[in-house]
Image: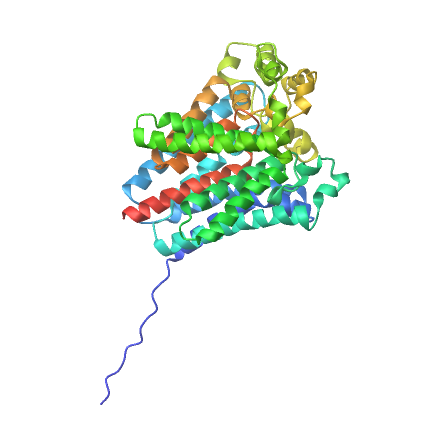
Length: 448
C-alpha cells in the first residue's frame, strides 16, 4: 500500500505587506504623475487626488501593519504627535485670521504630506523581498521621469513649442510637465536620483549608474535649472560643516568639494551652456541696498505691515494668506475650483507681488523670488508654525537620517526653502522622503 502524499501548501504571501506597499506606491504616483496626466487630457482636479491618497494609505497601513518593532512604534508616535501639534497651530491660525477651512486643509497637507508618507513607510514591516520590490518600482518611476526629460528635448522638442508661454529651456520638465517651475522641480528630482544611483544603488551595474548620473546632471543643463546646482553645493557645504568633528570625513568631503568646485568654476568660464550662472556674479546685487537683497526680503518687510495684533506674530496672517505655494499662486491658479469651498485670499500676498515686481532682478531668476518656503510658513502660521515645522524636520533628522546621504537630502530641502516654494511641491518632497524612507528601511533590514 503506497503512502499517501500530502499536498504541499504553497507558502502564504504576506498579503498585508504586499497590498500596503502597493497602496503606498499608488499614493506616491498620485503626487508624482498628476501634471503628466493633466497634460494628456485629465481634468485639473487630478492634481488634488494625492491630498486624499497619501493620508488614506497611511491610515490603512497604520491599521493593518503587524509585527512592528519598538523603534518603529517610537518613530511613528513622535511624528504623529508632531503632526497633531502642527494641526492645532494651523487651525488656530485659520480661526484667528478668518481663513477658509479649505485654506487650512490645503496648507496643512502641502506642508505635512511628506511626514505622513514617511509614517507610512516606517510602518511597513521589514522584508527583504518586499523591500526590493518596492525599491524596484520606485526607481522605475524615476527612470521614467529621466526618460521623459530627454524625449521632451530631442523627440518631442517641446522647447520649440512657443505657445506654452515659457522660456525654451523651462519647458523641459519630465513628469512635471507642464507647470511654472516644473523645470527646476524636475531637475531637482533628476539630480537627487542621479546621486542616489551613483553612490547607493550597488544593486545596479556600474555602467548603468554612471549613465543615470550623467543623464541627471544633463537635465540641469537642458532645463537651465542653475538653482539646483547651487542648492546641492550649499547643502554639501552644510553637511561638511557638520562633519568637522571627524577629521577623516572632513578631509574626504573637503577634497571632493574642492574638486567639484574647481570643475564647476572651469565650466562657468569655458562652456557656453554654463553662461547662465553669471547672472548671480555681480557683487553689487548683494549689498544691504542691492536689488537681490531687497527683492528677496520683500515678504519680511511687507507681511508685518498687515499685523493687527501681537497674535499675528505668533500665528501669522492665516494659512494661504501670504507667500507660500498656496497663497503665492495656487489659489489664483485654481480659483474657480476652490471658490465653491470658501477659499480666502489676503491683501498681503498681492502687496508682496506688487512691491517685488518693482525690482528688475526678479525677472532674471527664480533665485530672487520673494515667495519662498520658510517665508511662507512664517507669514502664514507665524513663529509657532515655523517652530512646529522645524520640530517635525528635527524628528526626521534624528530618527530617520541615519547616514550622510539622507542628511544631505534633508539639507537640500532646507536650502530650497530659502529660494522658492519647493518645500510645498508634492512631487519633489515625496521623492526626497521616499529615498530617505528607503534608506531607513534598508538599514533596518541589514541590521536585523
